[in-house]
Amino acid sequence: MPEREWWREAIVYQIYPRSFNDSDGDGVGDIPGIVEKVDYLEDLGVDGVWLNPVYESPMEDNGYDIADYRAIHPRFGTMADWERLLEELHSRGMRLIMDLVVNHTSEEHEWFVRSRAGDPAYRNHYVWREGEPDGPAPNNWESFFRGSAWRYDDEREAYVLHLYDESQPDLNWENPDVRADVFEMMRWWLEKGIDGFRMDVINLISKSDGLPDGDPETEGLPVGAEHYVNGPNLEAHLEEMYEEALADYDAMTVGETVGMEAEEASAYIGDDRALNMAIHFEHMNVDRGDGGKYDPVDLDLLEFKEIVTRWQEALADEGWNCLYFSNHDQPRTVSRFGDDGEYREESAKMLATVLCTLRGTPFLYQGQEIGMTNTSFEDPADVEDVWAQNFLEEALEGDRYDSFEDVRPVLEECSRDNARTPMQWSDDDCAGFTDGQPWLGVTDNYDEINVEAARADTDSIWHYYRELFALREEYETLVYGEYELLCTDHPEVFAYERSLEDERLLVVCNFFDERSAIELGLEGEVANRLLGNYEEEPSFSGTLELRPYEAAVYRLS
Ligand code: GLC
Image (cartoon, rainbow, N blue to C red):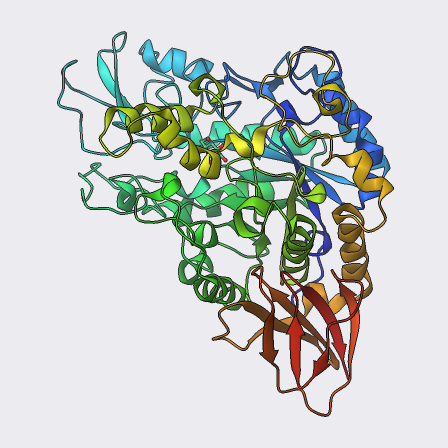
């Protein structure tokens, strides 16, 4: 059994501050707004919060373009507000995890301003290369957000690398001064009392020596990715980070690891290391084709089970899984892997069951607890996210789509904006999120799908989550127990066993909107249902007959 750690037992709730709760009517969520909802989080029963970036930023990428790591963006409040939030969470026994974005900064960050001006102390803080303004760029790398990963900077008269938006230049991690500055900043936050970091695209920090051209045929990831995904010095940089910034604190860390595969993960993840767990993407790519983010394909449950199982097994002895189906970069879980129409409640509960009964720490994204759905775009102007805007522009220039109406279904299925619409608190105007004009349109089903309604209905998704959290608390097996996949080849049902010492729990989940039978071979065993998303128990006599999106957790004896 892995060592007991608070973060193994925790349920983490992700807050996207812009869209959570607006306290001052400017249409943008803020920290005092989160403070107002701390009791809500306690009632829901989560143990900690991961807060998306609230730092000073020009907001080209909604705060992932940081201009000052030690300051709170005035739109979100003040440092005193933030301290209050920390206090309110801590006084209820909840933790606070901050977002650490150190692959890049904003071009407005002082380090960049000085680097661009040639200040010797900061000259090499970023990845600069010589070149002529009209090209060619130093290599063929592409940005994740489309287009070249290089921008010519007129002031410095050189190219600067940006794996994300033009305004997000990459830090040069090969420069020891950069590492020292980052580690000092991390310690500064830990000293303020935070409980850990979620590290943005952390496995991209080390780039291959000489920045060679990438293979132009790369699929799924931008051209050049093989030269910085788990780059040559990643392990060394993370080791140094652990020693210099983390070793003295009881902090939990979770790294966002783009393109990392299960087999590679144990090289970076572990208890006394910079990364306790990883936000990997393998299961997020399962319903995407070779074109990547905006190329949706049907879910193949066999592949999904294979990926989940590979990660469960790869981190069984050393390391730990971060469990998630949704976050601010992904469409809404129920629309994506469930059914946001007829079976919204059943399928959201089924997905909740998987999320909370696999081995790992469940991360819940705001709104998931009430089964919030994807949104719709009436007009190109409704598209807010920089990635989606770039995709739309390129799509309309190319010949695959004729018009906005043509691209619209893809946006409505894949855009990051789906996750960023305001939290639906009630059926009041703007879903109770703001008294002003919300920065992004509220999804129009808020009169039906909202927190107030979900709390009032004891059979709701919200209450089901609470039951799942209680079950995890009661059965340690759900946290620490071993995982074993059952009925591997069943194309519709995900079934697995969790076991610890003598205790055995069985989880069965139907991922489709049709009835499905499964032969579990449990003759002679008594199965007690502990939780399920249909009131009446499914019939269980050798075969288990599952209704659409049915989920059940059993105790075997
Ligand atoms: C991560 C963040 C995403 C951001 C990107 C660049 O993937 O989750 O929101 O746009 O990094 O920082």
